[in-house]
Length: 456
Image (cartoon, rainbow, N blue to C red; front, side):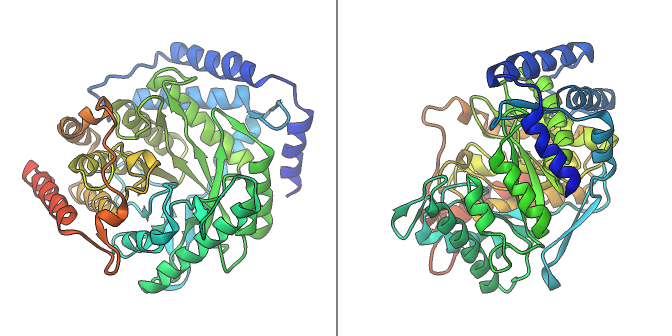
């Protein structure tokens, strides 16, 4: 803990800089300079690149950014400098294996390799989607009842017993604890009580997170989020999460939601910032594993060409240069009850799994609506495992994505998006099974994928 207290003190003693200057003069200009220095370019028809020289260069550029910039404290408006030896030590000590859960339900995450013979792990749940309390339990059951799901995550509660949840308010404590209770109830109901959880999704500030760190809510074998704010930033709220977990023993999952088309410019600069974010998170977030979740600046979804390229290059970059446990989120544009959601999920699953990542999903409908269900998580796992069984390489993965894009790419310019339907309109709540319509749509898409050559 002592060495981390010294990191905390840097957030008070570091060089002052305004947030705007950090964004523009530090992050944006550095990203632009490094993209030029390393001659980083992307090809919209090479969504999954096979160019190892490119992915190695992205890693080197991200490493250089991490050493040069460190991080920024939003609470004190000061730079938190990190030395090269600290970045290197963070790389050296990145966990290569990590156990989550307990008893018969324990699972072991591992740093994946390109072409790894071991199958990826799957987190099931709608990470961050707002889910009404009335059916959060059934929604959660719809994911964890799927046999291929290894670990659980959850949506967020925006109200409890009819009262709205406000950030930094006591209701945030109530909501986060209630979320954890519902997750445990779901796991017990389907006979998997020891399943590891990524929880406290209802906690925006540190209040709910801190309140949930006790064994009847989040156990030491569970994990929680330590976000790096856009870009390369942290605040005292998230420092508090780290300090608490270092004492309690819970697993830290760093989360960098780099905006593709934001301060890094296009995909190359965004990939560089993502690499830097993970390297910085090793030190200031004390990350046990990293969640890879770039966001398209206009379309949000992880299924756009640009974001898929960032996911693939970053996953490959770490697998080749600094193996780490990386879990790549799936946040489709479309919501449940639409065929496009299933094709987006399939494309994302292929990219994530072939790029040395584990998978989490799905945050359907941009993670903004309760329009999500366990059925698309089933497809996520089935597609990833099928690609793994077929020993799909990077070039083949790219061809698959190019075949799948025409099935859903139109939703990014479609007026009103493609939100689909809420969970209670695609699942029968008393049985927690898909409706005939939603199951039929899934079966039709699955048949089409098989006819295309993906032997599900």
